[in-house]
Length: 395
Image (cartoon, rainbow, N blue to C red):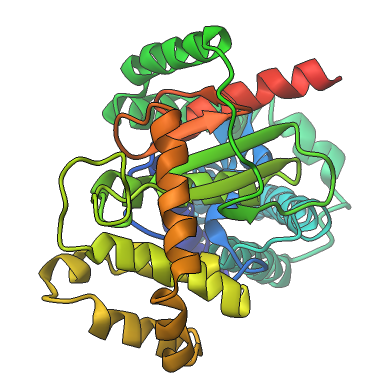
């Protein structure tokens, strides 16, 4: 049973390290699409990974989990190889540490179900592994761990001081690991630019924007303290990188509203653009807003198109790919095409282009928060900083 516990704890180390890297990539907008475990609004790993509850003392909870499970694995190795003169006591230490990990799993799972109302499949796998590890260690114990709990605790300051040192190394290692990973992504340098973005946002004038047009998303029903408006082009690579960050940020905060507006970089449907292209990016905008009009599946179409963006670059015409999209989203192609050819949808998309022109859009994506231009708004730390400022003002 100890070997089984060792295996599950080592698997947990790897899983938590993966979750740590996912956290940083989402934070810095380095993902090119949604995570594989984003199934729907209920099961969404990205939402949980960057929620306000994903950090403990500024360090990702996943990092704490990785280092704690590593310490647990080391205790199990010592107990298994009998490197200690009292392997039974070491095994009891392992049990209490595994109990702490299991208790943390219960707390984090409760936050997901009762507060976020969203579940991370990778996190759920980590929770299950923690319970399996705890069960295996419990079955391997010779006696009730409560019987000698006083003596065990006292030994942490005498014969088993090395266990105390190991436990102290968990928070120290967590902070160090967090610093190393953050530095590898250049986060300290990036933070200076992000602070500049927040400072500029405070001083720029409010731009009048129509909050009744565009795709709108808000997880909760309360009055939003933060309204994000994004102008984007469906064939813009930077917009593709931005969409997971923006949507994930809004998913995890019920008092945030996200509005997507199309700003095609093509004069065919955007009078603010001098040059005319092949009209393909206009077609993609038409498809998204028709999906919304016909079946309230505008966001699903939005995600699908960005996730397949590379295919649209190589395709001679977007028609075949739009056909595939309509099939996957169960939208009748004939109805979708008829809507896309209508003057109503053309006016809707071109109207958003004119609105972007009036707002002096210089490129895509361009992001406004509460009517103010937010530079680098596609980065999670910028959004978080502005959100916390607005949250403080609302109290």
